Length: 332
Ligand code: PBG
Image (cartoon, rainbow, N blue to C red):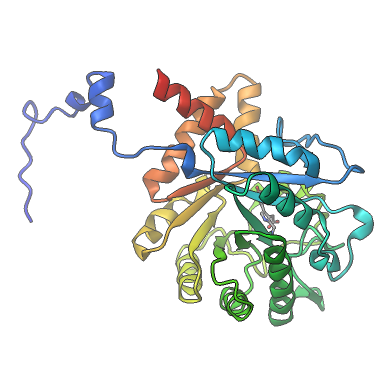
């Protein structure tokens, strides 16, 4: 199709921006509270609430979860994602605490499903909050071994699902784990459990604050399983692999530095979720604390940019703050 462009002055794109109402009429993408998913850190009494690198994000005791999820629900948020800070004494080489039916993660799931069954509870599947070395799987000769790790991830996933998780999010980047977990869920009649894969997880420096939040003391790095930040083709192949293996949605992580990947994958016919990770959160909050920018506006703009790129959901530590700001805009 040949488009004949009417030149200026016939074409005046500023017409579309002349007033607030006209701008609203021409707004292409919208954010709503149900687009947001809130990650929550859970702690035992032996750990402190404050996370110095993530101002205002607190690790919560299991008993504090009902208040937090009720608040989030009232703001229109329909999903939370749980991350435990495992007590140091329970961390082991092979992360056995991940299969404990009464670990912090399972206690958290049960607590939320008891008090607010309508809230959709997602869990993280990877061994790093439970291993003494901070890697996502089982080490052999210094490397995370793919196939034996899949076996333990299945055990971990089933443990979370038996506790009541509605959806599980494998963030480990092993090859073949989505299919293996999906098969295990089917075999146990958990056919309704949502399987949201971290389709692409980059080997990123932006996870730093998260690692201190869950107390992971990583030995080495995760470059042998997380994707090289220089690669896009490989990321798209990762996403296709997880779609073929039966994922219900795919997470792209981190968010802002990888908008190109979201926008390229949006034609794949599967919901894409952007994860605005801990380092992205810290950048915005710290810049705002230093009066360099307006925090609320920065979260609103970045969340909107994920939608523009093609994401349908956004996982962000600022979910409640953004939802509040959306309510204000609706009432304004
Ligand atoms: C664990 C996991 C990580 C994050 C989510 N799940 C950290 C990592 O891979 O080291 C990071 C989330 C964030 O930074 O907010 N596999």
